[in-house]
Length: 468
Ligand SMILES: NC(=O)c1ccc[n+]([C@@H]2O[C@H](COP(=O)([O-])OP(=O)(O)OC[C@H]3O[C@@H](n4cnc5c(N)ncnc54)[C@H](O)[C@@H]3O)[C@@H](O)[C@H]2O)c1
Image 1 (cartoon, rainbow, N blue to C red):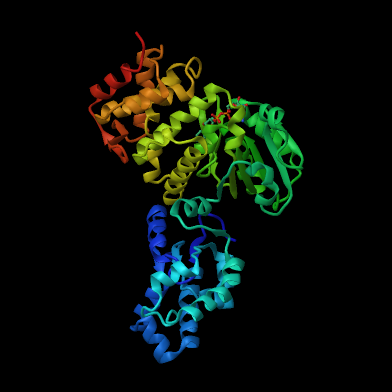
Image 2 (cartoon, rainbow, N blue to C red; image 1 turned 135 degrees about the vertical axis):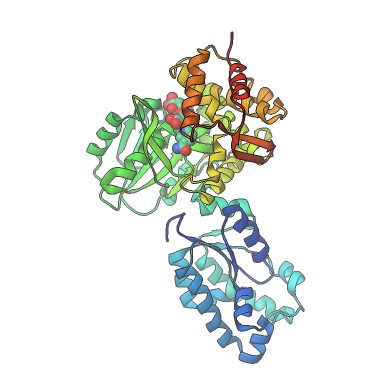
C-alpha cells in the first residue's frame, strides 16, 4: 500500500451505511476532494443509477463503475472516495484499492440499512429478503478489502495518518510493524522501565536532548545492519523519535520507521506529522527532515511510569490543541485525551504535510516559549513551562479568558533577562520578514496565523511572563 501522504482514503460498505455523509466529513478534515462514485457515474452518463440499471443492466453499470473508480484511484491526487456498495465485486477495483488506498469498511447491520434505503428508488433495495441476501454475499468481500473498519471520522483520520491509539498496543507491536528486518532505537531509561518492545537488535540512546546530536546519531548509523528494506522502531519520548526518525530519513537515503512514543509530548505531538530533527550547538532542531513514520503506535498505558514534570510538559501541548479546536481536551480521561489530540494534529499535518501554511497554527504560544527558553540558555525553564507561559501570552493578546491555561498548567513567571528574551523573539520574527507575526486566536477554536501586532504590545506581553 502507498504511504500515508500518497494514498487515497476509500470508503467501502453496503448501501445505507452512510459512506457519503462520512466521506464528506473526512474530506473536510483532510482538506481533500470527496469523490462520490455513484454520483460521479450518474453525472458522466447523464442518467441516474436506477436508470442506468434499468436501461443498460447491472453488468454494464459495473464496467462504468470500474472505469470511473480506477481512473480516480490511479490518476488523481489523493482524495476521499465513497464507493458504491457493489464496487468490491469487481476484481480490478479490489486490486487498485489494495495498491492505492487505505480502504475503510463502513459497516452497518442490514436491518438499519434496510430502514434507511429499503423500498426506495435503489435497484438492489426493492425487497428485504434479497437485500439481506446481498449483504451476506458481499460481506466477505468487504472483509477481504478492508484495512480498517470504522464508522466515525476521527478513527478514519487516525488510520489515514497511520496512527494506532490503543491501551496495550505495544504488546502487539510485532503485528503492527510492517514486514521487514527491524532494529530498535530506544531511550535507555525507557528500556530500563519497560524492556525492549520487540525481539530485535536494540540500540540504546541517552535520555533527553543528548539523543538529538550528530554524535549519537552517527554512532547509530555505524551500528545499523539494516538494508534498504529495513525498519527502525523508535521507542521513547520526543527526543528519541526525533533522533530515530532523522536517523531513518538519512540512512541509505531513507528507510522506513515506526514511532512508539512513550511520553505525553510524544503521544500527542512529537511522533505525529513526520518532522524529525537533531540539534546543533547553535540551536535546537536546526538539522532535520520531513519523514513520516509508517505507523505511530501509541499506547497510553506506557505513561504510567512518566514523571509528573514530564506529564505537565505534555499537558501544555494538550491545552494548546484544546484551544486550537475550541474543545476542552484537558478535561478528558487520558486515553481519550491522547486520541483526540493525536487525531487533531494528524489532520492538520495531513492537510499541510510540509508546513507551507496552515500547520503554523501548531506554533500557538511557541514564539514566546522559544524566546524564554533561549534567554534562559535552555536551563532553568523547561519547555513545558515555557509553552504554558507562551499560551498565556497568546490568550492575553487574543483578548481571551486565560483560565484554561492557569487552571490546568499553573504557569509561574520565569526569571530571565528581558532584553535577551526580546532579542530572541525579535530574531524569530525577523525570520518571518521582519514583522511581528504571531499565531493568535480570534476565539477558542478559531486560530489565525501571521497576525501583526504593535511591537510595544508584544513586548509588554513578553514582559508579563518574566519575574522582576
Ligand atoms: N517532531 C515534532 O513534531 C516534535 C514536536 C514536539 C516536540 N518535539 C521534540 O521532542 C522533544 C521533547 O520530547 P519529550 O518531552 O518527550 O522529551 P524526552 O524524549 O526527552 O523524554 C523526557 C524524559 O522522560 C523519560 N521518559 C520517556 N518515556 C518515559 C516513560 N514512559 N516513563 C518514564 N520516563 C520516561 C525520558 O527518559 C526523558 O528523561 C524535544 O526535543 C522537541 O524538540 C518534536
